[in-house]
Image 1 (cartoon, helix red, strand yellow):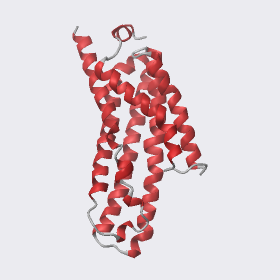
Image 2 (cartoon, rainbow, N blue to C red):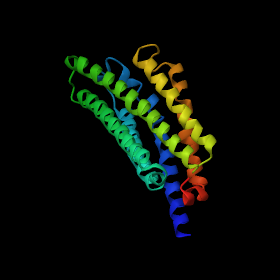
Image 3 (cartoon, helix red, strand yellow):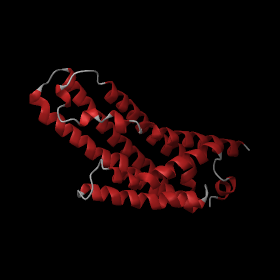
Image 4 (tube, one colour):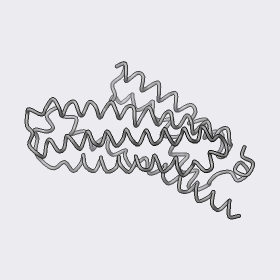
Length: 224
C-alpha cells in the first residue's frame, strides 16, 4: 500500500510539473517588442521581457524536475532510456537558461543606454535567442517526448494511445525544425506552430492524466 501511495505521489508531482511547462506560452507575445531591430534605442520599461524570462526559468526548472520525478518509475522499465530522458531534459533546461541570458543582456544594453553602437550586438543576441529556442524549446522537447513516449508505450504505465501521441509528435516536430533550419519556413510563421501541436497535446494530456489518474498499478508492479 505504501508503495502504491508513493507511486501516486510521484505521478502527481510529475503531472503538475508537466502542466507548469505551459506557463511560458505568454512569451510569444511578451517577446514581440524585443524583435524590433531598434529595441535598445527605445525607452520605457523592460517588464514584458523580464516577466518572459522568469516564466522561461520556471519552465527550465520544471523540465529537470519532471524527468527526475519520473526516473524512479521509468528506470524499472528501461534504465538506459530513463537516464537518457533525464540527460535530455537537463540539456533542454540548459539551453533555456542560455536563451534567458541572451535576452537579459539585451535588456542590460538598453538600460545602460548603449545606443546605436550596440545595435549589431543586440540584433545578434536576438538571432542567437531564436536559434537556441529552436534547439532548446523545440528540437529537444521532440527528442524528449519520443523517448518518453517509447518508455510509456513499452511499460503501459499510461494508456498506449497517449504514448503513441508522443511517439508520433516527436518526429513531426523534428520535421518542422529541419524545415526552419533550412529556411523552407520562417521560425515565427503561423504555419510553423502546427508542427508543435502533437507534442503540446501529448505533454498537456500526460500532465492531466498523471495528476488526476496516475500510473496503472499493475504495470508498476509487473514492470511491464
